[in-house]
Length: 344
Image 1 (cartoon, helix red, strand yellow):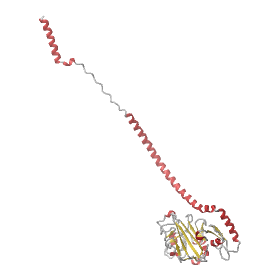
Image 2 (cartoon, one colour):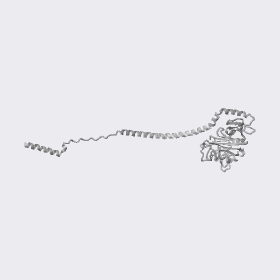
Image 3 (cartoon, rainbow, N blue to C red):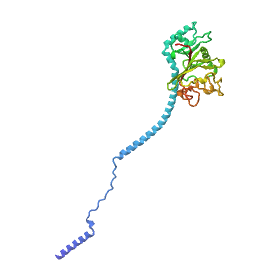
Image 4 (spheres, rainbow, N blue to C red):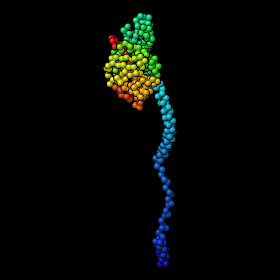
């Protein structure tokens, strides 16, 4: 019995020693860990989709930019063409302005023309627009003055102003559209040129004949802002061709500022091919017109027609120094005459 007990104790000691020496034998083997899978955020797909959209938009914008450049060139060409068309239309509208006015009073004009046919067979002389006014022709417009051997006057088409300050005015010059060049030679200024319903010069020979009786001159001007001014002269004479159509003026009145024709009083008429001015320079060539140039101008009513008053490099515009100075070209000018003793 003691041997069995010893043997059991011996085995118990062996087990205790083994347990103390290798405690890990009694532990469970560790489980092998598998590498964790990275979690994909839920927003990544949306980001990728947005990136694709941005790339697509960038491509579209690039294409639009290239198309815009082509369209811009096309637009510029169209604008240039429209500006050119606009200028052509403006010229046509300006030319049609007076025709529209005439059509608006067509019946009255036809009646007046019929009445004028009767006056041509009459013994009474029709000298100018004031003569027609005294015969009760009171509508402004174009009239044909019959020839008269006693007066030495040929048949002449004139424009009569039957309204301004009592009427009876014969218009001898008009600038309002810029469609007629006034840079003409001596012969053209002598005979007259332009359209009687538009821009014209009646002719120095006709103006000389009409001013052989005591005559009054009225100059009407309008600027590009729509302001209207006038200048009147109590006496106006244009001498004959032998005296180079020299100008003589009486007293000035009106609201056009300083008298800008006084400097041209008692001055011969000059054109680009006939220099009669009082200057070493050829004023008609410098000022681009036919006029009573002294040396050279205080006014230049037959100068170059500049639209919108654009006239800051040369002194050749339609100028009246007493109102807007030398660097402003007027929009509209009319020169008209009637007898000094005219009574409406």
